[in-house]
Image 1 (cartoon, one colour):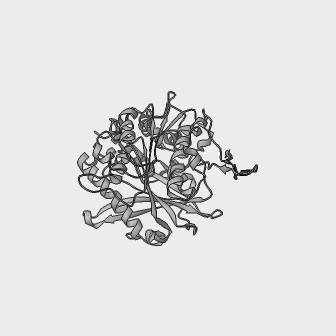
Image 2: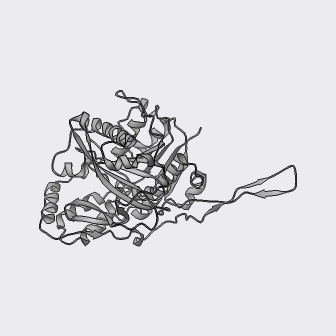
Length: 415
């Protein structure tokens, strides 16, 4: 059984059918997303004004010189760019016309005006992003590093917009496909593919989407974007089964060797139990593992301990978030707050989201805003550190920085 499959409760088909019925009843149900900053944060967070001075002393003279302080990037906050988002459709002719919806988030110059981008569960059942704009011109400051996001089992390509939007604001292009046959909508309607098909499709999806982006093929948007992509600095981040996906892309499998285009990976509550030791031992790229101590879907000890011991790639970091659950790494807690504010939203749909939210949004869990701040800090900081020449994220991975987050435990593997 894939992780997360237990969240498809009885009555889910009825719930989604009711959602579609409400969508077809007329009238827009678009709502603005409530600001996540209104949620009470229970732990301290680092700010971008934290200065870590570096001092060197010259022994040949009595003169002491002090280097300019390094101001640590606040990777949990939005960066210097506005965020653009567009959705494209890519058709893989080598797989009988398999069609993938793909979201792209990208950096936009400050001061650009555009409508808010809208995340849609179904026609007219949707909400407007607080930060992403709908299709504005991409900044000409590129090329930008590329990040590929892979959603979890029965997920959606934009289910972790809290992360993908912020990545774009810090100067990354982010692409995220729906793994068709393994999405939330497929699960609701009983159209999910069997496990072996899902596994095969996921790996082929990533190869196809990545090749399309780099070739600028399959979409005019990708053709226009191709020169803005830094082809030498590509990373992957995946949640749950998306973590399984990226590890099998970055490592050798019986079907294919590691993809040399991927230079760094981040696993968020990554499902790794079924990955052979041989594959883990063939991952030679920088790796960050992030998990929650209250995750009952992807147990932290069963899914992070072994990769942390076996992966030879360096640096290899691990962040355990005390009190985080499986959905702490998605926007499910936001949906739980948002859906009751959408006019005409059926109660049965709200109840269905509540059933997902038990894995990250209850009183026993770390406040979800704080869990996401920790996730953003380490994930975005890691990609800045590994895929750019900037130095302002390096202190995040020094001993002692995690003390800024009482809920975070940080470890670095030896050389």
